[in-house]
Length: 444
Ligand code: GDP
Figure 1 (cartoon, rainbow, N blue to C red):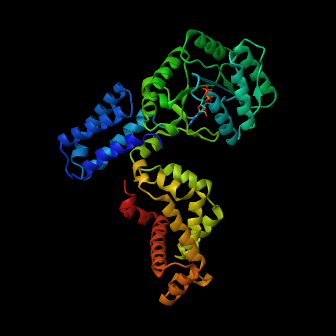
Figure 2 (tube, rainbow, N blue to C red):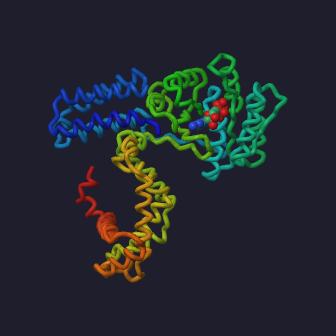
Figure 3 (cartoon, protein in one colour):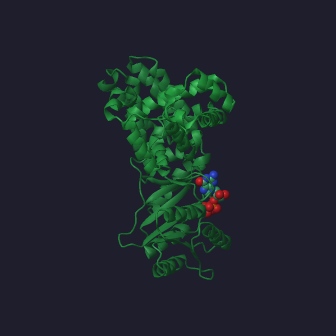
């Protein structure tokens, strides 16, 4: 997971502040020194770090923080906002042509993952209801054309090639005409890569850009190359002008320096990140969510999106009605657990929960919590329908019988009932906005 070490270091710096109550200027200076070191260790560009820390410090020394009853929280809030701004503010979406046909040009050095990303992008666009076509413009390496054809097959997207042509701009233009004629609505142009930026490559890309007039030029860079990736991005942007960055291999990058510096250094936002080799491992880049994850505040939005994807509207409405009548039964509890499963299991959810940093995740025994879930399921399934509907019926002797039925000690049954009661209370609060406001968990 990206930002693992940075996340650990920042959180440990803030933990020290939290323990203090009232903060002095010296406390803030100490904390900022730690933040600075953490960012430098994460390979964030030196100038970016300096500016970031100065900005944060200036805001933290304002009276609002020092006089606040929860200064540490205020500081975390400031750092969070600065991290969001650093990574580009809000998420940057792709630009589509208003006339209906969009051309996207993919550029980048060899080995960064450009061809793979072409496939991932085609896959992503198809999922959003678009009809993409790919185009191979690398005239120097026949193997690159072969590779794009294989990629195209994997994501079920046609690939336009012209193996005998030596003019990439013409190939791209022909592909565009063909795609439009055949009713596709997006053309993704895979261009040639080199081991480093050179004049000939840039001239060729400028030529393609001038000929097909893309709506979007996406630069693919490899997060693992750290500041080199940022310098390459700067170079491409100065010579060609790009619209956005795709940061690949974020799944293997524990530092995160490139992702944190790219926007500030190049002025161009990261639009997507590559999170693995498979074609579904492309995610839109959300600065707010990234900042929250780095600070261990969880990624509630991604969690909610996941929940929505596996959300059963009908069941939810039924549950709402029951809640209104205060009838949250053990069957509903079981249903809720089923939903957790369909969201990718306890592990996936914990990862995105507030307070669960990558470091804390290491301490969680996932196998154990999954096992516990299965045990709870078995216990509820051993109850009669009547008991599931009316848990008050579960007196000592019935609990004993259930324990025997599912082969668990009575203490487990008691524990489950306790958790059910707690969930019931929480769910009730969720369904009552006034109560939610009163609960300090939800106050800002
Ligand atoms: P190109 O030369 O820029 O076209 O690069 P390729 O698309 O051939 O990718 C180079 C290598 O990087 C391949 O082994 C890909 O599977 C791998 N790769 C691409 N994107 C990612 C990513 O987001 N995560 C990981 N782990 N590997 C990736």
